Image 1 (tube, rainbow, N blue to C red):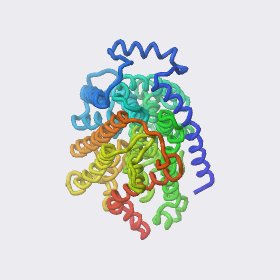
Image 2 (image 1 turned 90 degrees about the horizontal axis):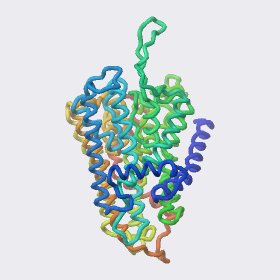
Image 3 (image 1 turned 90 degrees about the vertical axis):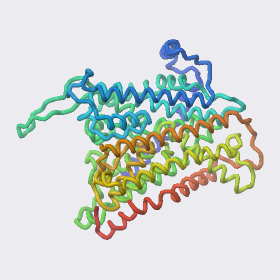
Image 4 (image 1 turned 60 degrees about the vertical axis):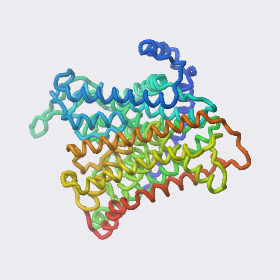
Length: 567
């Protein structure tokens, strides 16, 4: 661990804090339908889209109608991606003459991208054409990211409104999010990435002659446009198999740092949107502080673990830390930060192979996902996931003082607590349930690259990543099998929508309640006590739920490592 490493962490945190308020201000204006500096250009486009689609932008929806519209929207997304992959061989913009993708892999990929997971059981440059990468994956990256954001905004409206039956209009919210937020930022972002050396072309793959005289095919394509939204929208799916470790997806140290910033930017800004919409920005900063505490703890442990290396490496005199699986362009600190950020934010992009992290270094990304993508989290999903834990924390506080819990002027009653618990408990059912099946099912066991606790962690990580809609992998598991394609798809679907529906039910319930002014008995929710309570509730629930599984994987692997055993 070095001073330069800590300076990078501090600089990163400072930039995220600085971006949170202006992004929150801008997004609040967008979702409130207020004028922005882009309105003169984009408002006519927005109005035209409503006319074409028959949407009344003045008419809002009940939470159930809002949710049904969102679900139907995603049915269309599945059909588009699946159809493009199955018909790929007959479609244009296919310079490498890629064949049709298998049924089970097409299904897995379609579910993966509509749930904002972007789990990939394939190598992008060796499997998909330019058309599928653009029209199927990049297109869905925008829409799945927009969906997560607008669902968080709908839940915020539930807290902010009083005695109302509506939480917004899904079609209007998605249009505004894509048009005013995601597209403008990504256009500028993609140009920056091209400047850094990232390809953006529809030309053929490049043929090159190596120094030994061999012929080499270098895959290129419309990379920058996909990487911009995959990072900003916390999608994470790579144009290339090596993802952000590939020099064409992450050319420089500057591009690496900017990509890390973009992963957190919108999720952090949404905490400020919450504060603005409920009429007290300190509420948003309190939620941001909970996320910040958990982030700093995770990045400190991972950096420490990777900087100290392993007993086996140190015995060989390699005391510079664990560089296995890392790009020398980024080193230990940038790789450790990226691993924590991408699993905090439910992004899934990787600039190092998580399978090569130390046992404890790999455990932190696993825990980040198991907590339910709440530490900044996927765009939107992180905030509504965190608010579910806030509901539980407020309920616990109410039990302590013997009165009905309240949060931002709304009574938290049995319905809200039940919905929050349903959303939170369905996740470990997928994490742990499918892992238990996979480690005793012979065809699934055959896909594990490592034996012992490391192999167990590979499987646990896969189902945790899928259910948490993260998409990163331990890289040691061969997931492109019929069993894993179907079971991971089910985990992704449940992890996304079985969390969304209860959250939307809470939004509808809260929007219909009257707003209650604070009294002497109201628990303050903007100070350090509240932050500590929420952090404690998160860690207690996570510890009770996942410690036994972690003990079978990374914890026992670390203990074995100290005795010189490797897996």
